[in-house]
Length: 285
Length: 253
Image (tube, each protein chain N blue to C red):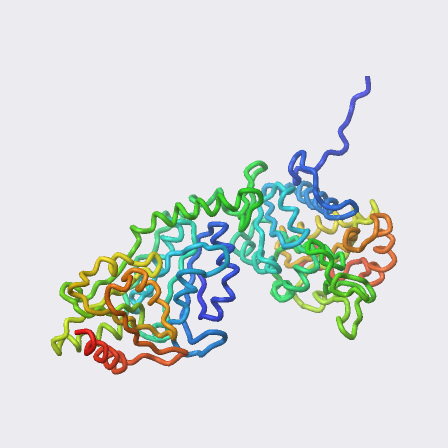
């Protein structure tokens, strides 16, 4: 496992692409900071498209998990190992500098047993480049000649097709929501607090929080009852908005989508999100 | 009827029946052979791990029988560090050209040497970029023509040749540093002995070793194989003298 922040993750691109091509299980964490470039050291959510669509050359995909609490950070790294091992593919945990500097009490998951670790090693024994007898060469290949690379792509595409079962999403107060917040990570935490405030004022607000950003929970948006839902508020620490692309793709213009954004290391606040939400609610409700 | 005694057979370190695609006069073929022979003599063929660089050196992936991976360009020092640290009993070597090791990979090369990582670097130095068509390398000689120095390497504009064995010899950690060549049968044997010694030191946990092999590149030097050998002996050896720079010996200090 490895971790870095935004510009450091860009340096990873080549390596992650190699791992994806060679189908190496690996886990890494991006604690997002302002960008692009060396950007700002303060938190942001400006790597969404890079993380979910193009983490490196070659069109590979990864499962991307987005925690919104320190407990989820712990749980998701643990789960990421299992997913990486299952798919023999890189897995990314996408968080941000606010989460990265928060302290919260957590319950740690149980340690893997020696037997589980031994079973994992045995599973990869044929592929491990540690030396093998003649005729049993293990070749960790980040590229292939002939039609080998196409076969790698075809196999990977087949694996990506199996990921619908891995979609995870939190649908918060969505049963009767007329205004839907779309947010992940720290923006979802802020949105949750704002929704509770709006509810106290009698506004039926709810949130769809993607937990897997890839595979993205398109159906959660696609299948909304647009007779009831009057508008969607995309809350992100990114200008221009990025997760909005996936929201728009699912919503297909069936209701207006508003943005409340900050960027470049500047933090969203409850007040800003509440204010932006109320201006939008005035227009649509 | 006299009995026949087999005195020579191709090393099992090279795939049976494989015919190398290296250029005529290139020493990569010979070097792959002696690596296989060194590992075989030590009984290590089933324990051998190769980390490819990128370039003509990377073509060797099609000929070797040992476990291998291809590092990103220049990163073999980092990849080998990961492999050796997680599998310390494996015999790990990197196989890199002068562009991979001394240009794009300079940081990884020096960092690994400085940490004294317990693997072996095989550094094939032909003073030019091979696979990409003959651009200037860090080890290109003054006055040598290349596609990016059509008027010959000029130190005011292009700097001076880089002597990697000497540079690494300034670090405290490395255990064994030798520069060899494969231009004569005697030198081929010396080169194989150097590689075998480096492998032996690694198996004994002694630390970092590098064998720099000064070679010719007839294709990109624009010389036929025989004239390349002349250029190698007259010019390359003058810039990159052969010999042992450091040998920690049988006993670790």
